[in-house]
Image (cartoon, rainbow, N blue to C red):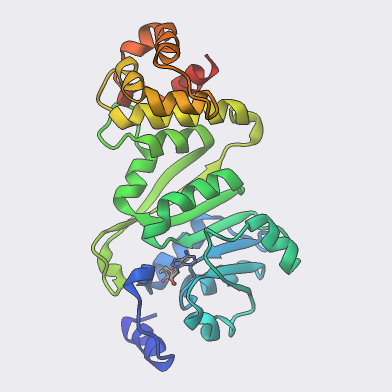
Length: 282
Ligand code: SAH
């Protein structure tokens, strides 16, 4: 699609793009096509697309499979989307219970997610996807966010997000998209990532994951400090989580920290996800 055609679709449908909903549209067919290719979509796949907008990416998905459900928050796109043979859910993708959605619509359960993600919901959406664990997700996100997702220990972008992604999935940054490819042009560049959640057998147990989350959260509040110090600095929050609301005392947290040994002396941003898992098992 040419930019002029995109503008025409918008004006014909009386649509004014809303900044508040991160409405920036990709229209270059070759980029959209590659995005679908990264997901390896075949006719056997059932796709969930989040934030279809005027459906340019949706049309590319439909070239590969006819099983597509979209969740779009802005109902002004409904009329355009109804021209496509898809299931349309007008709702906030974060608030919808994805399991129930498919009971309600009696569609087969989706196995892959594709989305040009509204920037402002990136973080909660990623956590929702990691929890739901589809076979695969291909997402276009703000470039800096994508870089944080794939960052390795000891590097500048290594963060709580990196650790959380790495323990639950394999994440690859597959392509960068300059902001000029969008209309209207956003403030930031984007990047496409492919997320392959790990099968349950390779993930830590829910109990370990819960502890993992609270340790990682507490530690990364002070990511340039030694782990020992960082956990002591966040002892209140960390202790409350471990004591399930009853609240462990500072002494309890101190006892735990003393058990850490050598790893307690390392800087938080140098500790790998696997090491955080080991720590959670303590
Ligand atoms: N997929 C289109 C549009 C991406 S813009 C393209 O590639 O060009 C992001 C889209 O997400 C917009 O259509 C916006 O209305 C929608 N959106 C924003 N917040 C949403 C939410 N919480 N749930 C579902 N859709 C949302």
